[in-house]
Length: 415
Image (cartoon, rainbow, N blue to C red; front, side):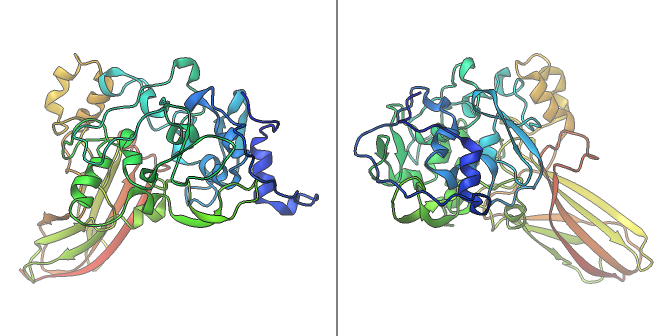
């Protein structure tokens, strides 16, 4: 690969940039931006992100190692360029960096839609950004099997089919630029975060949920404003360039406690004082899309428990909110016909769990009515919202679960 006269040193470069206290040598003087193009991308979107990290050190740290994220701090190993491994003991790489290379994947590589693997979005070739109002979002073309390494690289989003670097700024750089203001808009996310036409309640509809339920209703922000918060810094630490407004490449989502706790609000209403008839209101005023969104594996459990004055459980109930696998609601009655489908493993996984509550759309207030049989007395109602990254696995596995929020309410029953 042609990359000027510099060598890519990956994590060592990153450490020298982010942890200057461990480097004894003085920081070298920064260079002027070269007038000629010295960086090209013969590997296309299979170009390792470490190549980009040679100049864009802070962005590389966020993308590949999760620096600045509130994702769980845990030791992980991911495959890296030229079959090396990268160990990060203090942070977790972004969901994009780990797509397809995480050793503990929550995705099924070989049992998804139509029985195909997930390589079109996890290992995409360069694509053209769609229009905002496109009726149907098409998948990107997948990379060849031999190029399925590195997961979602920097080039996966930034490289155009012509080999130029798509970016919001038109600046001189060692590579060819393609200035595109849409890099700041949600259409950047559309290609991989919404597949096909809009089907309310179906999985993998995040962009269309944002556009139809949120943006078109005048409710607010682009995907980047929540998932890629802005900062002021140099785009490249290699060259003598001024600070600019730059998005942090973190994409905090289902693994981020900050994102989860701001997604749904809850409130308890007692419509008839003295009665055990209850209403639990779930309000999606914090997310710009449905909750949960994305893969049908995602689920939110609403758990309600009522204890009497002595602390004994008098009633409990649980509701599951999750995307449906396909265009129809998940249901066990389809299991027999599921066996004949190409995607039998995936669709049976969803149907076997049975019916569940539809996902809560952007701006929606969902009312859950519950009338537990309670004797007269004073009770305490506790409600919990629990997010599960993989609702299909054993419920006793808690490593992929996070508490989104809880509330406690006193109830007096007189009749």
